[in-house]
Image (cartoon, rainbow over all chains, first blue to last red):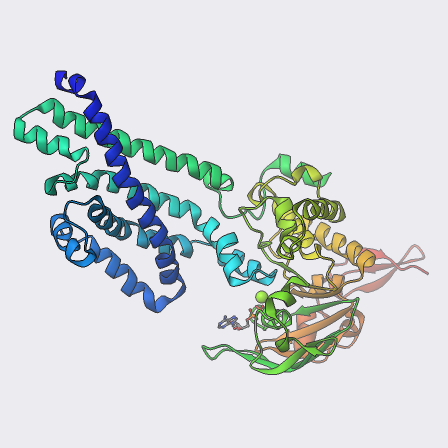
Length: 230
Length: 270
Ligand SMILES: Nc1ncnc2c1ncn2[C@@H]1O[C@H](COP(=O)(O)OP(=O)(O)O)[C@@H](O)[C@H]1O
Ligand SMILES: [Mg+2]
């Protein structure tokens, strides 16, 4: 406890560094996963290949990936960019399948009727398919947020500073308070970002609340029927 | 006028959905395609706005082959209403109705005004404008679908079993509403249904299709009831049975019309 109180500044700074590493990776994996997921949804032949490849990424041990990546990207081992690239790949592994499912979940009737009233392919993607895939994409994003924030800590092992540094340092010096601080702040950060995502979803997907995505056909709601009878 | 010139459609999996259909759909009338499920009605309807391209034959609108038009532009000029309304669940009622005006680049304000106007036209309370489709009853959703189809005042309205999924009472109400609208607006309506009663109620002309996408008979409801082309049609329209088999019975000096069960259906007017 004393350690924590004496080192609040450092904890706060590491939290911000941790945030700066997580957010770009989360956004990148989401932004990349959407088109990959769409292609997997749209072209049946590509689905197996894409989903398997992305899934396999997750099987690569994180330390090995962090050490091999610099050879491919030209970044130095300890650079934040190296870690962000690795985290993005893991994020992809987590969310691509969900992204494909999200587009699968768009009601084909709605897609067809959008085409029938004159949406061109591009406009239909942005105006209809993407928003309707939104609720499932959001669910995937939330998993990526939590897993990325937690994975950032691994970087500490190769010397990329983050809240994970509190684990490694705490272990070496035998300070339980330091380990606890790292653990708690990681969880707090994950919960905070998750909360932001949920909030963003409420704002962007107001229609999805209550989880009723398919319009009902016959309303059992007597007030609505009364309104209609007027 | 919409014309089908011996069109056929074979889907990639080999299904022959429509076979050598020739048909003229006269302007400002309601033409109903009726047949059991799988008789190619939807396929035929979708050839008009190029959702389906025929494998053989041509579809023309006022003499122009639709194959030569830009599909997206064509669709923005033809009203389309389908079963389960096909509304965009993430857009409000007003935004749904304004879909095509907005696609055509209308100003937001004008498009919304138009949407509110159309809500009056189809008998929807304006207070529903900012609800989402999921918050409406099935009947209300179909009204929104009809309003959306009418939004840019198209000459042609394609309707694919638009009232198929609502309960019978509401369906009846929507059918009456469509008859009223059609008297006021005089669109060229091509309407698809599997319900022969609906076809006879709404159609100025009725086209009966058979499995495999072949036309069996075309005519006014009266013509078809009076002289069914063959046993299939007679059976399909129920000409010889049920409540269509009516008899006249003299009761107290008046001529009552009674159905097959002897229940009175009405009184003969003199
Ligand atoms: N996209 C498609 N691919 C393959 N077969 C289809 C497709 N759409 C319709 N069909 C088949 O074509 C036939 C006619 O279908 P459809 O035009 O939908 O008939 P209806 O609207 O009268 O029920 C059916 O046998 C149906 O299974
Ligand atoms: Mg059909």
